Each structure stands twice: as C-alpha cells, then as structure tokens.
Image (cartoon, rainbow, N blue to C red; front, side, top):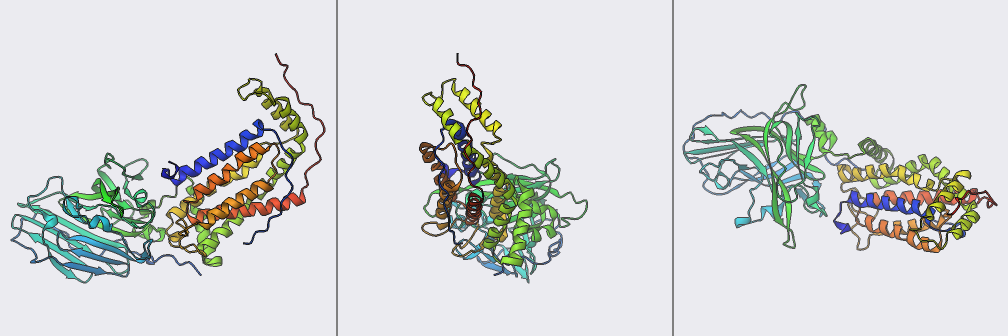
Length: 571
C-alpha cells in the first residue's frame, strides 16, 4: 500500500513517525548504559543547460488571418495519404494529411529515459486501432459535429519552408489548418477554420492519450491539464485526471491552456501579443479528457488529454518545449507558472539557483553540486546541532536518576493513571537540569523544509533531468542498478549515526524499536530520486563526522548525584 502513495506523503509519514518515536521514547522507556564512542572512517564536466534558444520572440511568424465567414469552396482534397516533415533547430514534427494531424513531435535537444529522441506524442496511444483509436494531436473536436468526418479526410498540403497549410473541402464543409514554425524558438503559430454551408463551426484542437516522456517510471502521475485563468483571484490552476472527467475548467479570459508532464509542456496562448503590458489573455474553451491507454503489459492506464479553442476560426500561439524559466518567460512571464516549486518555493528557487551556480563555476556536475550544497547547509546548521549535542551529554549525566525514576514505576501498565506522575517527575528533572529531551529533533525539523525544497528541485527542474553522477545515469530518477547502492549505503549510515549519537534513556528493547527507522527510511528512499538520496546520505555522513568530533571534544559529564524530584502523594 505504501508504494502507491506519492513520494511527498511517504516522506512526510516517515518524518512524523521518526519524530514521534524520538519524543515519546524519552518518557516511556528506561535508560541503559551509555554506548562507547565509535570511530567511523568514511571514504568519500560542466553541466550545460539543455538546449534552450538564447532569445525567443514574443510572436510566431505572421500568417494571414483566416476569414470568419467564408462560403465552402469547391471540392479540395488529396489523392492519397502522405506525411509532411517540419525540421527546425529545436523541433522535428511529422504531420499526416489524413486529418491534418501530428504523428510525431520530437524535441531535438532532449532524449527520453531510454536515451532515444524524445517524442512528446504517446506512441502507444497513437498505435491504437479500431474502436480504441484516439484522435491524434491537432485533431479537431466539436460540440456539434459537421456532417463531414474531417479527422479522416485527406487534406491537400501546401508547404512553404517552415510553414505548412492543410486544405479540405467536399463542397459543403471546408476546413483549413496552418502551422508556422521558426528555426530557434519553441513557439509556433496555429490557425484553424471550419466552415459548413457558409457558417463558421466552433471547434477546438486536441492533444489526447498522454503527453511527454512516456518512458519514465510513472508517466501517469506526471501528466496534467494546465491553464491560467486571468480573472481568478488566485490565477493558477492544475488538474490531474484520475477516473471520470468531472473537473471542467472555466471558459473565460485565459493566458494559456494545454497539457504538461514533469518537464515539458504543450500550451496554447490565445493572443500573439502574450506578455505585453495590459494583456488580459483571451477567451478559450478548454475541455479535459481522460483516456484509457494500454501499457506494455496490456493493462490500461488513464492518460490525460485536452482540447483548446472554441471558435469557428482559431488563431493561437503554440508553445511545445521544456519547462525552463529562461525559455518560458520571454514568451510570456506567466508561463513561468508551469514550473511548480511547491510549498517551500521560497527555499526551492534560491536552492536551485545555488546548485546551478555551483555546477557552472565549481563542480561542473549537479551530483557534486548537491554534495557541496549539503555540506554548506549542515555547516550553517552546526550551531543548532551543537546545542542538541550538549543537551544529549546532559541527558547522559542524568542516567542514575532516570534509572531510579523508571525503576519506581517499572511494573505499572501504560494505561495506569500513575504513569502521568512519572512523566511529570521526568519533565521536572529535565527542567531543573536544563535539558531539552526533544532537542535532538531540532536539526532534523529545521532540515525538513530544505529536504522537501530539494525534492521539488529534483522533481521539476529540467536541468536535473538526465544529469549524471559517477554510476548514476540520471540524478532525477531512482538508480537503475539491480540493487540500488545509494539507499543501501544510506541505511548503513543511519545505523552508524544511531550508534554514535548519545541516547540516554534507551534500553535494549527501545534500541530494537529504533532499528525500524533506518529500515523504513531505506525502503522509502529506495524509490526516491538518486539526487535526493545523495543529499540525505551526505547529510548523514556530515552528521557522523560532527558527532565524532564532538564525542572526542566533549566527554560525558560526571553523573549528577541527587537533585530532588517532587512527587505527588499517592492516593
């Protein structure tokens, strides 16, 4: 059941359980002898930004506006099915004239998880036949269908450099689609028009059956419908479709709408003046889809889809490319909202910039940059850790009194009301000796926001995608070894950390219970990205080094002889 939960939920459960065990065990379990100090000996290319053009124009190449009310022309069609290819410095797009649709949309500067050219069209959805077939990307969707089946009609093709126009007419229904590209931009222009008996027919352009890198571990979880409603008080919405489609976005002033996965997006902008001052977007009709698409094992999975448009004539800017700030913001600053930095965005964004700077100027590798950043973070937190260590040493000095207190209430059940007296006396003992029993948790609690911020950075920053480190092929994904080495080393480091950390009040029974925590963390991190495991492992190793130095520099204080502890009279 645990492996079905999201990574954020699993990590949160782990931290909560760890905190509860550390806090509660101080009061419920008697102390053992102090473990002796253990000495630990631990042995411990420039990353280029994945191809984004330096400058992206705010508009796509100009195409003459299509008339909104034109009578259907005489019959126009092609004699046979053919494909048309558009090649820019960034895109390799294959169109079919059957329906004037996209068969393949490859981003040239990116590879998929299998190191093949990244095709954003889900090939499994495209291969469906018969009643299972889904409309290909850029098919037409209608609320009121015309009598002609335009998605299966053979359009006439007119190609002029990086512009291609598809025309069809059967004398009653006419349709035109035009796609304009430019060499060094992920932004294109799409125009579509449908006329039936001289009347414009409202329609939308669809992308169904999933989007993005379908070769990753869990592509379903990464697929979302996205749109930016400019009229809302909080103008950013994201919908993930799981079962029945019930979440229908509003129809209104929209800055963009489309489909995304973790690192890439295909979104349409209703105006070509996107990003200019005072631009309020435009009116778009947005329809979500949830399509069943077979996996390699023939089991079906739900994949997200969307239709955008809604007019008889649609003239849209189309962005198909990476979710990269440097690429998105020149198109429209609001497109930066496609990068979801999470709850701790105020930590995640500076952390990402710091990692990028360290990689560019020092390590030339994001894996080593994570290690450097982790050492810096732990150094900054060292004063807090030092306070925690001093508190732990004081706890060791209280061992004789803790032993006596636990012996006094030894045979009482946990449900015995007198157990509350034991807790009160223990709290008073800690207070009089200046000991914070949960002080050891503070460094961990402070690191939790940093931990989740780094998780977000590794999850959504496209710079991390495909970044290598030693034997790790991609730090944004789990290791691909048969037995993942980093989680195994992490578990060993946590056992060593527990062994070295002062643990007054921990008896053999409690020690066995605490063994559960490294094993649980090992299970959770086994499915985490290698970069996240590397961060936590490095943090553990730094903590081990700090603890070793402190154990040598701060011997355990002499045991406190007697400090009276008040006790309530038993009735």
